[in-house]
Length: 69
Image (tube, rainbow, N blue to C red; front, side, top):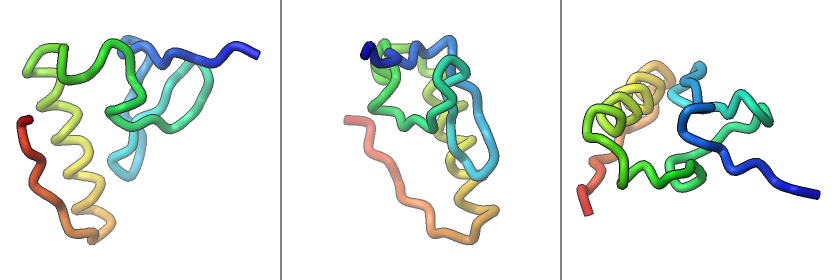
């Protein structure tokens, strides 16, 4: 059975700072998307990080600083 590639254009932010693939409906992390989030523009990475941070703040979870490397 083929698996979804979770193309970045299919990913939408959902509640709780999570991201979901609209093709397969799975919750995905930054390591699951294609092409790699690190290979895409700074603006997209910043939006992803901000959405994760808002979700963590809303849930009361402590946020972790992410390194650039």
